[in-house]
Amino acid sequence: MTQRDRDRLVVLKKAQKKLIKQSQAAKELDITPRQVRRLLRRLRDQGDAVVVHALRGRQSNRRVSEETRQKIVQVLSQQQYRDFGPTLAAEYLHKMYKVKIGREALRQIMIAAGLWRARRQKVEEVHEWRARRSCRGELVQWDTSDHDWLEGRGPRLYLIHMIDDATSELTARFVTSDSTAENMRLLWFYVEKHGRPLSFYTDKASLFQTTPKISHHLSRVERDPKVLPPTQIGRGLRELGIGWIAAHSPQAKGRVERSFQTAQDRLVKGLRIAGTRTLEDANRYLAEEFVPWWNQHLTVTPANPTDAHRPLRVEHDLASALSHVETRQVASDYTLRYDGRIYQIARRSIVVGLRGSNVRVEWRLDGTIAVRFRDRNLQVSECMVQPKAKVKAPASPRAPKPPKVSAAERLGNINLRKGLPVWIAGQIG
Image (cartoon, rainbow, N blue to C red):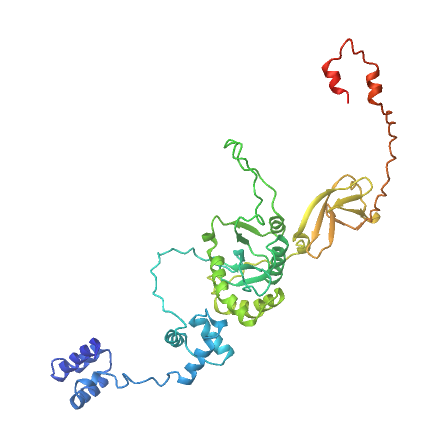
């Protein structure tokens, strides 16, 4: 009998002895007066055990059968489920083996079987979270995670995350390198699907910010940072009318950092169960399984239902904005050099003022090249440069060798009576 049962028994005995009214006893026990009368009748017939529930000590009718318990332990003992927690294990048991069980019941089964160790809850320092943005598309956090996603089964992959700050809606893709081109491809996909957000929130990586080259030997006045040209991604965002905000620490963009923690736990295990070994299979699982699950279970409703994404307009050319752009000068024969190649401008594209002027050269994501002069697109073609013939230089005539002189001839003109200087005698062979 617990202390709560003893307290209930005291109240019932007071009502039995007429010390309090049945209505007052019902109020103290938080039950109806009718139930109080039932308990008083049972108290007179059965004694003090009336306050103990009749089902106490008996097995629940909803208890998992022993056969199901053995099946669960057998499945979760496999090597591929070695680090699954109760929550994720319950989802995979229902999805792949049609075994429906609550995570708390599964936790007790796993603890009893030695598959899970109970952990004591740590009291963490109270942290005041930054409030979410109110509208979807108002701020999107953008970052890349370098992790062994395939656990050695395939190539090294990088995961690029774009997560909405207001809703936690996820857009992601696996790539083989954290390069400007791969990030631009995901940016293209995001803008085509959702529209142009107000701003992106990233770290200060060289993809987004030009690193200033400052000598530490200069004075503070001389070390003042100058206005540097934007990176290719920064220029593309500016042409699309999208803002860019730099985070000063990883904690500042904590939402996307925590999303990587979830992915490094759940996504790695999902790729393991699916047997993923290639980039294509990893992106297929990401698009068909993980991202839909994330956007269904881990997103929240924004405070303001207004969507802040803006549509693409006529002046927004994704192929032009999301490309590698450089400036080249047109030669007198209407050619230009780029990436070690020579390109000829078509005759119908020649306009006044083109010769000697600077043109914009765009190396696009599909591998094509585009040249623009002011607001006009120029048609160019690559010139096939003929290899230069190697001409052998004529051999220079050699001077005739002097005739050999014997030792006797060298000593013939020497006057031995006068004597010979030592330095000259040393030169004689």
